[in-house]
Amino acid sequence: MKIKFITTALLTCGLITSLNAQRLTFKAAKSSSSYYQMAVQIGENVSKNSNLSLTIEESQGSVQNVKEVRKRSGNYVFTTPPVLIELAKSKKAMFKNDNPADYEKIRALFPIPYLTMHVVVRADSNINSFKDLKGKSLLIGKGTYGANEAKKYIEAFGLKGDVKLIGAELSGAVSALKNAQIDGFATSGSYPAPNVIEAAASIKIKLLSMSDEEIAKTKRDKIIIPAGTYAGLKEDITTTTLPVGVYTTTQMSEETAYELTKAFWESKENLEKQNIWWKAITVNNLKMFKTKLHKGALKYYNEVNATIPISLK
Image (cartoon, rainbow, N blue to C red):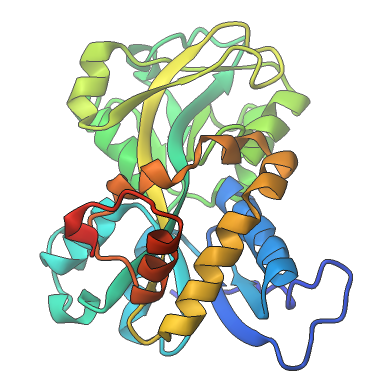
């Protein structure tokens, strides 16, 4: 399958970027996702606070981002949950045919808002729990973390073969739900997720909550989406979450990694003004990384006296 990339021009916030600015490629997520929005926000703010210019590339998901480490050179920056890097290094799951040595050069930079699973259905449906999805259709996307998680959850909850899983692009999910072509869709992204906001603005929706027993079966952490996060959402929703970070490789210079990390944290206050999801991110989130920090990032964290696990040094 030929993968199409949508590349945003150099982010300049309406200003002409200096010809001397160092350019970085930032592999994000689908353009309709919250993680693409985050990448754009990071790019805009970093360009204001440094001599770096980020080109944002749309991605099919975190798996693709990690796999591209094998062929990317220079200043390649990308997002992914830490667990995928662990799988890549151990030659497991979707990385079983890869050479794990190719992923040893990955280094961590800074954390970003965590993935949150959403399962969205129409408010006028009789679907109130995952068990009610039996005999229904659920669009899960393809090639993304969210698609893999949704499939795993359906199987873990004893619904394998009972739910029609549709591996179509999530870009058409809201329209399909609105027109009753599907019964629901699953998506991952920090809340509030743009496609869920869009769905709630188009029709009345509800999100499916998970019981503690169901969450235990997913082997993920629990998170609460507060009531009022989306239009018509009157109750808290219990679902799962997974840490996400920004990474590069050892091919990035120490100076560039330092400048990028420093510019990100110095932009944090402004990022919080742009979207509430940034408020949850602090240097305490560094402990979620399972991969060593880039030397440039480590230099910055030492300067600000951040507590850094020995395993990351």
